[in-house]
Structure formats: C-alpha cells, structure tokens
Amino acid sequence: MLVASPDLIALARSQIILLTQSLGAVASAIYITENVSDGMPPNLVEVAVFPEEGAIALPDSFPILSMGIGGLVRQRRFVLPLIYKDTILGFLMTGRDDRDWLEYEQLQIQQIANTLAIACALDRHNQWLAANQQRNYEHQSNFLASLLHQLRNPLTAIRTFAQLLSRRIVAEDPNQKFVVGILRETQHIQDLISEADRPAQLLLSQAESEKALLPAAMEIAPIDLSEILEAIINFASAIAQERNIQFLANLPSHLPKVLGNESSLREAIGNLVENALKYTPEMGYVRLGVDVKPDTIYIYVQDTGVGIPDSDLPRLFERNFRGRQADGNISGTGLGLAIANELVQKMEGSIHVISQVGKGSTFAVTLKRAI
Ligand code: ADP
Image 1 (cartoon, rainbow, N blue to C red):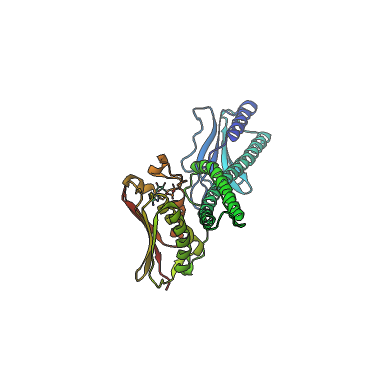
Image 2: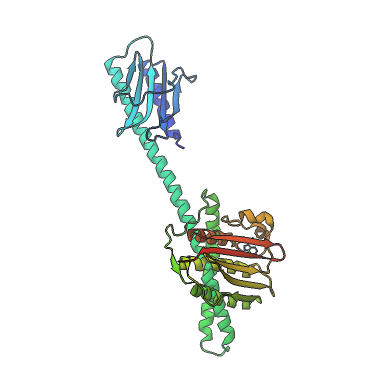
C-alpha cells in the first residue's frame, strides 16, 4: 500500500499554509491517488487539510476522466489535478468565498500544484526504490542461506571420506599429511559456514517471504535415479559407519527414469538422508528405499531415530523451523527440509512424513515417472 512519506506530508502542509496566508484560501486539501489501475476509480488518500475539520469535502465519485488538464474551476473553488508526465498523482482543492480568483493567483495555485505533483512523483519513486531494495535484500539473504546449506552436505561427505582414508593408511605413510590437510581445511570451511549461518538466519527471520531462493527456473527432464542414489548411498554409508549406525539401501534392480532435475534431487534426498543419520542415535537403522508404481516413484528414507512430535509436523517444512530440536543438542539451521520441499515441488513432486517420537520417522518423496 502506498502512503505519503513524512517529507511529502510536510511539503503538502507548507503549501497549504502558503495558500492560506498568501492567497487567503479559507479551506484547502491535498489528496494523493493510490492503487491506480485501468478502469478502476483510484483511492484518494488525504495528505493535508485546512482547517483540520476538513471544510472541503471531496465528492464521492470524482469525475477524474472528464477533467481537463487545466483542472476544474467551480465558482471560487479550485480542484486541480496533480499531474506528472501525463499521470494524475493527486488533487489539490482550495477555495475562498469572499472574492473571485485573479488570473495571477490562479497561476500561483497552478505552480503550487506543479510542485506538489513533482513531490508526489519523487515520493512514489523513492517508495518503489525502497520496496525494491528490500525485495533484493531478502532475495539475497535467502539465496545465501540456501547456498550455505547446500555446501554442507558435500563437505560432510568429503570430511567423512578423509576420516576413513586417514584410518586406512598407516601413520608413517607419506600421504597421511595430505589426508590430514584435507581434514584440517574441510574443518576450516565448516567453521566458516557455521559463522556465516548466524547472520544469515537473522536476516531470514526479518524476511517476510518464506520462499527459498533456489533457482527460479529449474530444468526438468527425464533423469536416471540410480546414479543419484548411488552417490548418496556412498556418502551415507561412510557417515553411518562413522556414527555407528546401520545404513541399508533397498533399490529395485531396474529403476525407471523420473521427471526431475539431477542436482536438485541429489540435494533433496541428500538432505533427508543426512537428517535421518543426524537424528538417529548409535546402533540405530537408516534405510533408503524406492517403490515403483505405474505413474509415480516413491523414494523413502526411514530411520529408527528420535522421531518428531505431532505438534511439530504442520510446520516442519517452514524455513528456520526446528521444532523440538531447537532446544536439543543436535545442531542445525532448520533449512534442510524447507529446501528439500521446495526443490521437490519444483519437480512437481511432494514430500510426506510419518513419525513417532522415540520410534523413528519416514520421509517419502513422490515423483512422476518419465514416459
Ligand atoms: P535442521 O535439521 O537443520 O534443524 P531441517 O529443516 O532439516 O533442519 O529439519 C527441520 C526439523 O525437522 C529438525 O530440526 C528436526 O526437528 C525435524 N527433523 C527433520 N528430519 C528429522 C528426522 N529424520 N528425525 C527427527 N526429526 C527430524
């Protein structure tokens, strides 16, 4: 909604004082138009009026279209449109009852109207710029938060692979120092990402929009699931081994193609698997499975972890929502599911969850089969 800025209101008031004190107007009012759209009468918003009680009442239906560019002169009352570049941005109404306006006075009032019109245009432009800036800011902070989150999965995988490698080569091996280097540098990047997470989260909570700013246009094509799932199984097995969790994969020998986007699907399923491993204590199970139906494919991630309370379920896919885990000691940002959900929706699929506290959770992604 458009509202006049304090500067415009101050200017409008000063012009009304000018009309009253220099030209003897007994009543004046300035209105700006808002929500101007084709064929609809615009709303008029009062910006300044004298006297305060509003001696000039604006007619209910104002004949804007029938007015000439020079405004209307109704006896001793002027109604001047505030026109900037052929657009009516508002109206100035003024009047006195004791004598007619002289020509030079009419000219002066026209000049006041011109000044007000320019001020209205600048005000509108400023408001548009501010709104645009806010939108860009939200866009960028959302984008940054998503990007940071998406860096986390591959980084965890690299670290886990390096940890496994480090254990498999003897301490005297000259390559050991390279592995130690990889571990040190990945830790460094993880620390940087955690640092960057904090301000990103603050920015996000200010953002009105809950939209994840992932690629606006996603290319959707028939894709091969097996390669994507194999990569996920690889990193999940390594992490599971690290955390003393049993990871099982249950894939049919032949997987039909699905409609989707490779990197988005890797990210979405990767997030679900990472969560399952994160929220499942030692000795638990995580299973990745696929069910093929005539038109759809279900990819499910099942765990025997801590589970999710019913009260958390309705908000689970909201950005920054961590529910019960917000008070727990498992760290997170509340972004993974929001990102996964948005990516899957862009692939015209859906994510469903069933869960029981203390028993575990199952997240299922439904995608269309490619014909
Ligand atoms: P994060 O894990 O970083 O907090 P997510 O968006 O991935 O963020 O998940 C949102 C919340 O959903 C988590 O904080 C947690 O409360 C819950 N959650 C997600 N996956 C699981 C799971 N497999 N088991 C238990 N809780 C989960």
